[in-house]
Image (cartoon, rainbow, N blue to C red):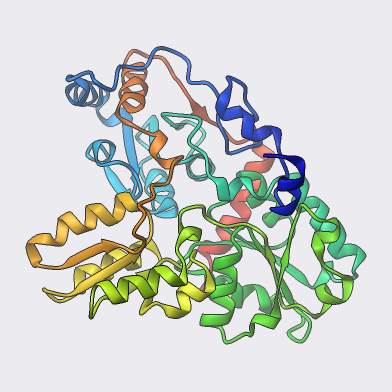
Length: 398
C-alpha cells in the first residue's frame, strides 16, 4: 500500500503489525510474540489423545477455559465455556487450580490474571492470539486523549467506561480516572452509573475502545441521539474534533471496532431477508448502528445463545456474530428443526481467536504436565491494582 493510499484510508502504519511476521514481542500490545518449543504437527492423528492424557495427568492442577468463539477441536477440552468476563470469574472461583489455561485471546487472559490469586498462573496457548479491537486503543493514545479533554476544559466532567475487550493498561487507565468496565450485556447499566458520577447536566462518557457498542447502547437503549455522540480518532490531531464538538457531546466514542462484527452490513440484513422469508435477524451490539437498527434482536453472546435455546422449533435465524459459534449453534439446534445461518454470505472467523488450535493446546498442556511453565500472562502489580478497581466497580453495579 502506498503512503497516499494509507492516508486516504485514514490508517496509520504501525510497527506492531510486523510482530505477527517476526519473533519479537511488545508486552503492551495484544499482538504476537514467539511460541517457544516445537509444536506438534496439525496432522498428528494422536493430538486428541495427547491432549486428553496431558489434561488427565495434570488433574485438578489445571483448569481449561474455552471462549465461545474457539474452534470445536479446542472447545472439547474446556472445563467451562462462556464469554470473556464469565470465564475470568470462573477462573477466580477455582483457587485450587494452579494453572489456568485460557483458550481465548490476550486481554481475556490478562483479566483472568487480574481476578485470580497470585498463586495461580494463567497460560495462553499461543501468545499471538490478540485482539484487533483492543489494539486500537493504546495507553499512550488514551493518555493523549485525556490531555485533549483537559485542554478543552471538560476532563472533570468525563467518566471513562471501557469495554471488557480492552488491554489491562486501558482497564487501569479507567480505574485511575474513576471509571468502570462493562460487558456487552451490562453496558447500559455501566453508562447509567457513569453519568450519575458527575453533574447530570454536563456529564460525559469516554467510551473505549468499541465505538459501535457505545453508540448502540447510548442511542438504542438509552434514547440519546446520534448527535449526542462524537468519534475520537487517535490518529488525528485532537482526535479530529474541535473543543466545541467535545463540549457539546455526551458520548465521546473511541474510533475502534471488532473486525468480525464490523463486517456485517445493512446489505447483509436485506439479502438474508430476501433469501430466507420469515428469518429472525439476531446480531451482537458490536455491529454497526445501521445493522443493529435493522435487526429483529440484539444482544450479547450469552443473549444469542439463550434466545436460540428458547426459540420455537422450525424457526429461522440469521446470526451476526463469530462463525465458530454460529456453526456450533446451527449443529446443536438442527435436531430441533431450527434453521440457523451466518448473517453474511462470506464467512469470517475471528483470525486471532483461531490461533488457539489443537497443536498449541497440546503443546501447552504437555509442557505443564512436564513441569515447564510456558506462555504465562502476568499483569504488573500497579496495572493490576487499578484495573481490578475498575472491574470491581462493574461488579458493584446495581
